[in-house]
Length: 89
Image (cartoon, rainbow, N blue to C red; front, side, top):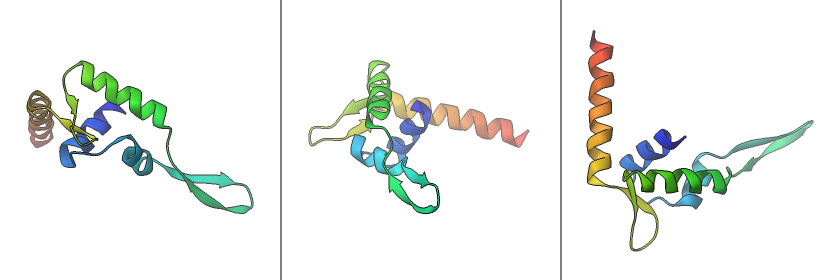
């Protein structure tokens, strides 16, 4: 989950917990009734973002939301390059 959050923040900076809650939400099954959309757990998302902050990948923005740090960008780029190199073999 944390890797997915880091990647999404890399692509779209400034997203907050509420935005991620909508992104990771899905239909709630209700038996014979049609499903309704439910947002994902904000507590899980918040704790993952806090863990990413502790290791220095993500930081809070002044106006709200979070963004990837320069160290986090370097880590994401390095990992993506390794995966691409392995796929080309």
